[in-house]
Length: 160
Image 1 (cartoon, rainbow, N blue to C red):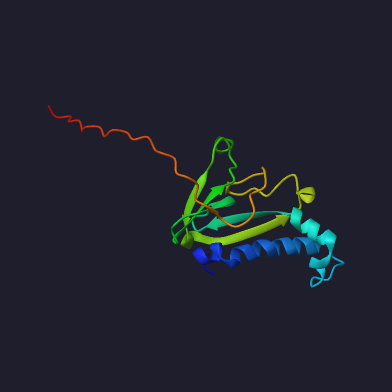
Image 2: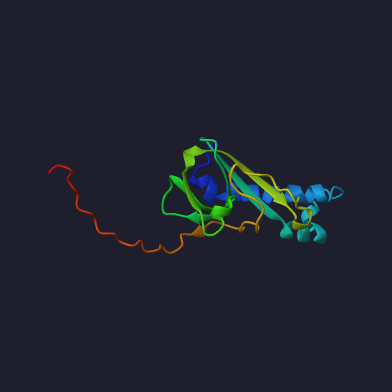
């Protein structure tokens, strides 16, 4: 399965998020029939409170947890804010851009905040227990920050 632009920004990714929530709810309410579950008020409330985590696994062995997808004007890469694991990265914002063809697996995990294990799965690369990722469709690119312009240095010669 190619995890291309259409997979992320069309129905497939969003349907995975909803399917993870539905299955988590059905596990929590085993007496409900799947076809009638959406009509149950307790089930619907439980589903609305769920947190969903998305973890990317890349060809090079790294993995990342997506905090928020950032929509870019390109169809060859995925850009997202990552959930940082190391304390050194928790002070700011870590934005990752990866080529779609480097994504080899995507995992979606739904859990209710009251049932979240204290020891969350450790994600190799970046991720740990912090605030839940933002849910919903990808966001538009944030305004760009101006980079300071540094004057070019004149080359120096070592020959005299």
